[in-house]
Image 1 (cartoon, rainbow, N blue to C red):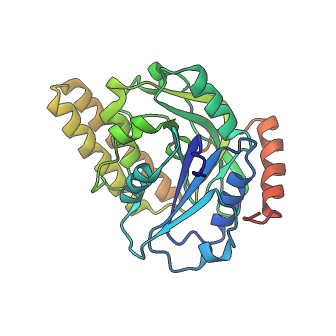
Image 2 (cartoon, rainbow, N blue to C red; image 1 turned 120 degrees about the vertical axis):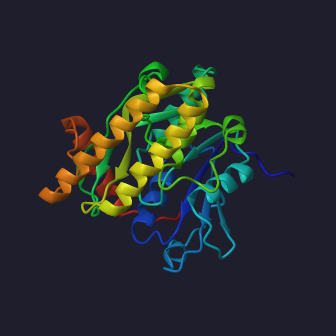
Length: 289
Protein backbone atom coordinates (compact mmCIF):
# COMPACT_ATOMS: atom_id res chain seq x y z
CA UNK A 1 0.00 0.00 0.00
CA UNK A 2 1.40 3.40 -0.97
CA UNK A 3 2.02 6.00 1.71
CA UNK A 4 -0.67 8.67 1.99
CA UNK A 5 0.31 12.05 0.56
CA UNK A 6 -0.13 14.86 3.11
CA UNK A 7 -2.16 17.94 2.25
CA UNK A 8 0.45 20.30 3.71
CA UNK A 9 4.25 20.26 3.78
CA UNK A 10 5.91 22.38 6.49
CA UNK A 11 9.61 23.27 6.34
CA UNK A 12 11.82 24.16 9.30
CA UNK A 13 15.46 24.66 8.32
CA UNK A 14 17.66 24.23 11.40
CA UNK A 15 21.17 25.37 12.18
CA UNK A 16 22.02 24.86 15.86
CA UNK A 17 18.43 25.44 16.97
CA UNK A 18 19.24 25.06 20.66
CA UNK A 19 16.49 24.89 23.27
CA UNK A 20 14.10 26.96 21.11
CA UNK A 21 13.80 24.18 18.54
CA UNK A 22 11.87 21.95 20.95
CA UNK A 23 9.19 24.63 21.39
CA UNK A 24 8.90 25.20 17.62
CA UNK A 25 8.44 21.49 16.88
CA UNK A 26 6.03 21.04 19.79
CA UNK A 27 3.86 23.83 18.35
CA UNK A 28 3.66 21.94 15.03
CA UNK A 29 2.77 18.68 16.77
CA UNK A 30 0.08 20.57 18.70
CA UNK A 31 -1.80 21.75 15.60
CA UNK A 32 -5.53 21.05 15.36
CA UNK A 33 -5.00 20.33 11.63
CA UNK A 34 -3.14 17.05 11.37
CA UNK A 35 -2.74 16.32 7.65
CA UNK A 36 0.84 17.56 7.34
CA UNK A 37 4.42 16.46 6.99
CA UNK A 38 7.24 18.33 8.71
CA UNK A 39 10.48 18.66 6.75
CA UNK A 40 13.09 19.24 9.44
CA UNK A 41 16.14 20.16 7.39
CA UNK A 42 19.43 20.13 9.29
CA UNK A 43 21.87 22.69 7.88
CA UNK A 44 24.98 21.18 9.45
CA UNK A 45 24.05 21.60 13.12
CA UNK A 46 26.58 20.65 15.80
CA UNK A 47 24.65 21.38 19.02
CA UNK A 48 22.70 18.12 19.33
CA UNK A 49 19.33 19.93 19.55
CA UNK A 50 17.71 17.75 16.87
CA UNK A 51 18.85 14.51 18.52
CA UNK A 52 17.51 15.77 21.87
CA UNK A 53 13.98 15.97 20.42
CA UNK A 54 13.62 12.20 20.37
CA UNK A 55 11.37 12.42 17.33
CA UNK A 56 9.02 9.47 16.81
CA UNK A 57 6.13 10.99 14.82
CA UNK A 58 5.98 9.42 11.34
CA UNK A 59 4.90 12.74 9.87
CA UNK A 60 8.32 14.24 10.65
CA UNK A 61 10.98 13.80 7.98
CA UNK A 62 14.54 14.59 9.06
CA UNK A 63 16.79 15.57 6.16
CA UNK A 64 20.51 16.00 6.79
CA UNK A 65 23.72 15.78 4.79
CA UNK A 66 26.18 17.25 7.29
CA UNK A 67 26.81 20.43 5.29
CA UNK A 68 26.09 24.08 6.05
CA UNK A 69 24.54 25.52 2.90
CA UNK A 70 22.47 28.46 4.13
CA UNK A 71 18.80 29.26 4.58
CA UNK A 72 17.81 29.93 0.96
CA UNK A 73 19.42 26.72 -0.26
CA UNK A 74 17.64 24.70 2.41
CA UNK A 75 14.28 26.31 1.70
CA UNK A 76 14.65 25.50 -1.99
CA UNK A 77 15.59 21.96 -1.01
CA UNK A 78 12.41 21.73 1.09
CA UNK A 79 10.31 23.03 -1.79
CA UNK A 80 11.74 20.29 -3.99
CA UNK A 81 11.08 17.58 -1.39
CA UNK A 82 7.58 18.75 -0.41
CA UNK A 83 4.79 16.30 -1.23
CA UNK A 84 1.86 18.44 -0.14
CA UNK A 85 -0.38 20.56 -2.31
CA UNK A 86 0.33 23.40 0.13
CA UNK A 87 3.70 24.51 1.49
CA UNK A 88 4.39 26.42 4.71
CA UNK A 89 7.51 27.53 6.48
CA UNK A 90 8.65 28.72 9.85
CA UNK A 91 11.93 29.33 11.62
CA UNK A 92 13.45 27.02 14.20
CA UNK A 93 12.95 29.44 17.10
CA UNK A 94 9.36 30.56 16.46
CA UNK A 95 6.00 29.20 17.66
CA UNK A 96 2.72 28.41 15.87
CA UNK A 97 -0.73 29.06 17.28
CA UNK A 98 -2.54 25.67 17.47
CA UNK A 99 -5.06 26.87 14.85
CA UNK A 100 -2.49 28.31 12.44
CA UNK A 101 -2.52 25.48 9.90
CA UNK A 102 -6.29 24.94 10.06
CA UNK A 103 -7.15 28.59 9.45
CA UNK A 104 -4.60 29.14 6.71
CA UNK A 105 -5.62 25.96 4.87
CA UNK A 106 -9.30 26.92 5.13
CA UNK A 107 -8.60 30.40 3.76
CA UNK A 108 -6.57 29.09 0.83
CA UNK A 109 -9.33 26.59 0.05
CA UNK A 110 -11.90 29.38 0.05
CA UNK A 111 -9.72 31.79 -1.97
CA UNK A 112 -8.11 29.93 -4.88
CA UNK A 113 -6.83 33.23 -6.30
CA UNK A 114 -4.42 33.68 -3.36
CA UNK A 115 -0.92 32.31 -3.95
CA UNK A 116 0.73 33.18 -0.64
CA UNK A 117 -0.86 33.73 2.76
CA UNK A 118 0.64 35.08 5.96
CA UNK A 119 -0.83 35.93 9.35
CA UNK A 120 -0.55 38.64 11.94
CA UNK A 121 1.95 37.75 14.63
CA UNK A 122 3.11 38.66 18.09
CA UNK A 123 6.78 38.88 19.02
CA UNK A 124 8.51 37.06 21.84
CA UNK A 125 11.92 37.72 23.34
CA UNK A 126 14.84 35.35 23.88
CA UNK A 127 13.21 33.72 26.92
CA UNK A 128 9.71 33.47 25.44
CA UNK A 129 8.05 36.54 26.93
CA UNK A 130 5.65 38.56 24.80
CA UNK A 131 7.33 41.74 23.64
CA UNK A 132 4.94 43.23 21.05
CA UNK A 133 3.52 42.57 17.63
CA UNK A 134 4.54 43.15 14.03
CA UNK A 135 3.07 45.72 11.63
CA UNK A 136 0.30 44.10 9.61
CA UNK A 137 -1.41 44.41 6.25
CA UNK A 138 -4.22 42.09 5.13
CA UNK A 139 -4.93 42.46 1.40
CA UNK A 140 -2.62 42.26 -1.60
CA UNK A 141 -3.16 45.96 -2.28
CA UNK A 142 -2.20 46.88 1.29
CA UNK A 143 0.79 44.53 1.42
CA UNK A 144 2.14 45.79 -1.90
CA UNK A 145 1.15 49.46 -1.66
CA UNK A 146 4.75 50.68 -1.31
CA UNK A 147 7.16 48.11 -2.77
CA UNK A 148 10.01 50.57 -2.36
CA UNK A 149 9.43 50.44 1.40
CA UNK A 150 9.14 46.66 1.62
CA UNK A 151 6.32 44.23 2.32
CA UNK A 152 4.60 43.64 5.66
CA UNK A 153 4.21 39.88 5.30
CA UNK A 154 6.23 38.12 8.00
CA UNK A 155 8.14 35.33 6.26
CA UNK A 156 7.87 32.59 8.93
CA UNK A 157 4.06 32.84 8.71
CA UNK A 158 3.93 32.03 5.00
CA UNK A 159 1.73 29.28 3.63
CA UNK A 160 0.99 29.00 -0.06
CA UNK A 161 0.48 26.77 -3.01
CA UNK A 162 3.41 24.45 -3.61
CA UNK A 163 3.19 25.17 -7.34
CA UNK A 164 3.79 28.87 -6.62
CA UNK A 165 6.87 28.11 -4.55
CA UNK A 166 8.24 25.78 -7.22
CA UNK A 167 7.75 28.47 -9.87
CA UNK A 168 9.26 31.19 -7.68
CA UNK A 169 12.14 29.74 -5.69
CA UNK A 170 14.39 31.72 -3.40
CA UNK A 171 17.36 33.48 -4.98
CA UNK A 172 20.48 31.39 -4.42
CA UNK A 173 22.96 32.72 -3.52
CA UNK A 174 20.57 34.83 -1.48
CA UNK A 175 20.92 38.54 -0.71
CA UNK A 176 22.16 39.08 2.83
CA UNK A 177 19.29 38.43 5.30
CA UNK A 178 16.54 39.62 2.96
CA UNK A 179 15.75 36.59 0.80
CA UNK A 180 12.06 36.88 1.71
CA UNK A 181 11.78 40.51 0.63
CA UNK A 182 13.62 39.73 -2.61
CA UNK A 183 11.11 36.97 -3.39
CA UNK A 184 8.12 39.20 -2.67
CA UNK A 185 9.55 42.07 -4.74
CA UNK A 186 10.26 39.74 -7.65
CA UNK A 187 6.77 38.21 -7.66
CA UNK A 188 4.22 40.70 -6.31
CA UNK A 189 3.21 42.04 -9.73
CA UNK A 190 2.16 38.60 -10.98
CA UNK A 191 0.98 37.00 -7.71
CA UNK A 192 -1.73 37.46 -5.11
CA UNK A 193 -0.78 37.83 -1.43
CA UNK A 194 -2.97 38.04 1.67
CA UNK A 195 -2.70 37.72 5.44
CA UNK A 196 -5.07 36.67 8.22
CA UNK A 197 -5.67 39.32 10.90
CA UNK A 198 -5.51 36.84 13.79
CA UNK A 199 -2.16 36.60 15.60
CA UNK A 200 -1.50 32.97 14.69
CA UNK A 201 2.26 33.08 15.12
CA UNK A 202 4.88 34.12 17.66
CA UNK A 203 8.02 35.52 16.04
CA UNK A 204 11.13 35.51 18.21
CA UNK A 205 13.02 38.81 18.33
CA UNK A 206 16.24 38.93 20.31
CA UNK A 207 16.67 41.76 22.79
CA UNK A 208 20.15 42.73 21.64
CA UNK A 209 20.33 43.53 17.95
CA UNK A 210 23.45 42.87 15.89
CA UNK A 211 23.68 46.38 14.49
CA UNK A 212 26.40 45.59 11.93
CA UNK A 213 24.31 42.70 10.59
CA UNK A 214 21.25 44.95 10.43
CA UNK A 215 23.21 47.62 8.53
CA UNK A 216 24.44 45.04 6.01
CA UNK A 217 20.88 43.73 5.58
CA UNK A 218 19.57 47.28 4.94
CA UNK A 219 22.15 47.80 2.21
CA UNK A 220 21.55 44.37 0.70
CA UNK A 221 17.82 45.06 0.43
CA UNK A 222 18.46 48.41 -1.22
CA UNK A 223 20.73 46.77 -3.79
CA UNK A 224 17.94 44.27 -4.56
CA UNK A 225 15.41 47.10 -4.86
CA UNK A 226 17.73 49.24 -6.99
CA UNK A 227 18.35 46.42 -9.46
CA UNK A 228 14.62 45.67 -9.65
CA UNK A 229 13.47 49.24 -10.19
CA UNK A 230 16.27 50.15 -12.59
CA UNK A 231 15.51 47.15 -14.77
CA UNK A 232 11.90 48.34 -15.05
CA UNK A 233 12.67 52.02 -15.43
CA UNK A 234 10.85 52.82 -12.18
CA UNK A 235 13.11 55.70 -11.19
CA UNK A 236 10.64 57.28 -8.78
CA UNK A 237 10.44 54.02 -6.84
CA UNK A 238 14.24 53.83 -6.86
CA UNK A 239 14.53 57.29 -5.31
CA UNK A 240 11.92 56.43 -2.69
CA UNK A 241 13.72 53.16 -1.87
CA UNK A 242 16.94 55.09 -1.33
CA UNK A 243 15.20 57.61 0.93
CA UNK A 244 13.52 54.82 2.93
CA UNK A 245 16.86 53.05 3.36
CA UNK A 246 18.57 56.21 4.60
CA UNK A 247 15.73 56.85 7.06
CA UNK A 248 15.90 53.30 8.41
CA UNK A 249 19.66 53.50 8.87
CA UNK A 250 19.34 56.86 10.62
CA UNK A 251 16.75 55.39 12.98
CA UNK A 252 18.98 52.35 13.58
CA UNK A 253 21.89 54.63 14.51
CA UNK A 254 19.69 56.63 16.87
CA UNK A 255 18.47 53.46 18.58
CA UNK A 256 22.00 52.07 18.79
CA UNK A 257 23.22 55.26 20.49
CA UNK A 258 20.36 55.00 22.96
CA UNK A 259 21.07 51.32 23.53
CA UNK A 260 17.56 50.21 22.62
CA UNK A 261 15.80 47.78 20.31
CA UNK A 262 13.15 48.86 17.77
CA UNK A 263 9.89 49.90 19.39
CA UNK A 264 7.21 47.20 19.25
CA UNK A 265 3.49 47.66 18.71
CA UNK A 266 1.35 46.79 21.75
CA UNK A 267 -0.31 43.38 22.15
CA UNK A 268 -4.07 43.27 22.77
CA UNK A 269 -5.23 41.72 26.02
CA UNK A 270 -6.94 38.71 24.40
CA UNK A 271 -3.82 37.85 22.40
CA UNK A 272 -1.64 38.37 25.46
CA UNK A 273 -3.79 36.07 27.58
CA UNK A 274 -3.85 33.32 24.94
CA UNK A 275 -0.15 33.41 24.13
CA UNK A 276 1.01 33.47 27.73
CA UNK A 277 -1.04 30.33 28.42
CA UNK A 278 -0.07 28.58 25.16
CA UNK A 279 3.65 29.24 25.57
CA UNK A 280 3.54 27.97 29.12
CA UNK A 281 1.64 24.87 27.99
CA UNK A 282 4.15 24.13 25.22
CA UNK A 283 7.04 24.49 27.65
CA UNK A 284 5.74 21.45 29.53
CA UNK A 285 5.07 19.30 26.46
CA UNK A 286 7.52 16.86 24.91
CA UNK A 287 8.61 17.73 21.37
CA UNK A 288 7.75 14.22 20.25
CA UNK A 289 4.73 12.02 20.76
